[in-house]
Length: 327
Image (tube, rainbow, N blue to C red; front, side):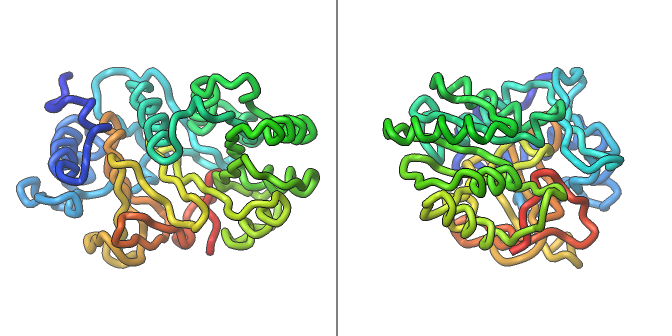
């Protein structure tokens, strides 16, 4: 199965050719993804009417729970699963080329923060390390490897060791990223408050019933006061996407060039806009072998510069491990 375009074009895409590549991937996935094809047909969409990315039908994210969403005849070489509470049906994202995922998150991080070999990566992800098939753990592991820093690594609940490592890195002026799940960052900062000058704290969301849910503002204020930070960064990602958006402290996330966010009204899924407030819809071109057009259950606001913020979750949406907090 040969793609009708050079796959390397995904990660060199720009504003001028994003639309063309999006449309090419749409037609490819309609032909080769039976689940997506049936969904598009069910909506009564005529392919010749699709002229711009905003018109491309989005697959509801819930389909990843009930179907194998794949645009290839090749068997997957890895399957990622979302987190969830006991008994919950989780999403499964089947990848036929895991290198696409690696290229996406490595170049996406570099796009926002520079070369990984300049950083020490500390991953505080206990809830994810405790289960298999986590795309977040896979990403963090590769980032740790790519950083090539001898003190990069994972931490479970060994907060004292983490605190000692951070103090050593701080004393040497080493650029450090502390990537953490929300409840663990709160627990760690409560037990080991400190003043950070060379460390970025990045929360991935996720309380999973481990404590009282906080608004994003309250969470960031708490972490900032305990860790001497001016801002707390954030990562927007999910099992069903291969790309991530990053916030550098203002709650507004920036996408890499191959990812774009739109919003549509909850009561009219066909009214899509590049700005305004509504349900978030994502085009992630790195999802070429699954589905690049995803309707999430997040409510957000998109700005004219393409950045976006997350305001909460749609009513009755499943609780997600990487859930974003209601503002």
